Length: 432
Image: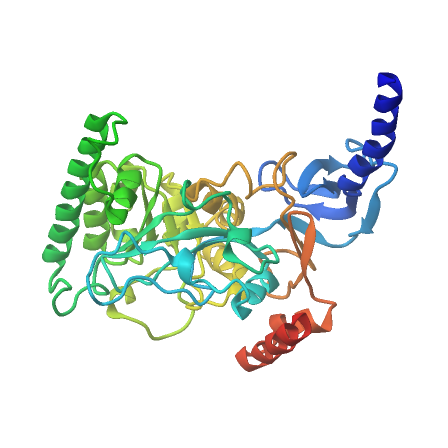
């Protein structure tokens, strides 16, 4: 009787398991730029169940018999791009009631159906660090998002439970942006003092937690801001620090050393003035290219060779869009500017992918085309650093999220804001 039951269960279970396994997909004939390792001519990329199963030359990679095959001859395939500093999703951060808001989560204000996500996909971006603005010393918690098709923000996270796990970093800023009327600081020196005072309070809060040793009676009263800063002090949450001037860059480094927290420097327009200090501190940098006139005086001495100088000094360097300061659809152009100013091609491509993934602690999931990593990749019409190249397809975890040959998707790639605004309105009407 038990044997019959086991046989019946097997008959019903096996088809279900087979259905759960997605059909393997193979992309063949393209030049593959895996980022880790040399480019592969006439390469093969095999994906299944949202993961990369194999990548290599035609002779080294076997094609599953039941695979769906895609001819990518003449194309270039590389990992989905990682934007380490973005403001897509129509989110916001702390309000003007205080200069320091470590308790505020941008996660709670993002619209996952925002047009801006589709626009980013049109530029080949598959992972983003969405930041609150830089008008505060601490404007709140950032969030790392995967650009999946989602109705709610939880479906875009890299983690399972944002109440129990760290979903992003902490946005800080110094220099001109957070200076203002009370309760904001009026000077750079006061800005640093306010940050120091809050971290001293966080150190005290952390000590009380450690002394309680799990005893709920001895635990300090819950404080959302302090809990966030304890995560920073424990190294669980990275500080992403907006900074431009050379003296502000050094202040950001000085504060991180004093309190022992992990730091990524963002923008660093005057990095070229303090290259040795940045390298000595071992701090990663997420830099921007300003490709048009205007902006603030802090950026007046930005240089295109920041990337090259940081690379030569051994600093981990990535590019970001600061969307919409630069257009997400033209993200590879930042790396092309870097190469034009002396950066190596290898480092420039890393600066769009694995370098940024490393800054976000996501390098085990994204940033390179390797077996076991998420099947996030883009198909390009040509060289990724050529101004003539177009993103033809963007895939996220094995699902096609953008296709230039689709007329609706093409509107996001080609049109101005009114075009893709209308496209989104039509898209939403279709969904509802």
